[in-house]
Length: 130
Image (cartoon, one colour):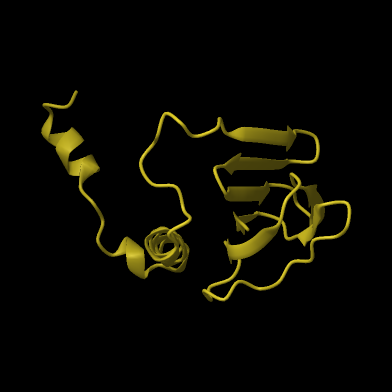
């Protein structure tokens, strides 16, 4: 019940959480995403009717997913091991990855069959199309 005092007490933010490693890591990821969108004019802004539909591909058994919106590609590996993830044709430049705290994204090789080579487990990679 939202009117109960106990609901209010449970809903208060714990401002010590950003100091805990797991929470600090997530906060850093969101800050990096915001900076990427702000600093890159090619990142999609507000929705437009003339944009092409997003393209989504996945392999449930292998636990990977990719989606493309405008000129941004996101590749996710939810598997427990590093694996190759196929991506759509085109020229893609790695802009950011979730397992790297630096803004200069660590390199991942794209081979001739358009697969991201060895995406680490639990990692999200964001690419910008040329």
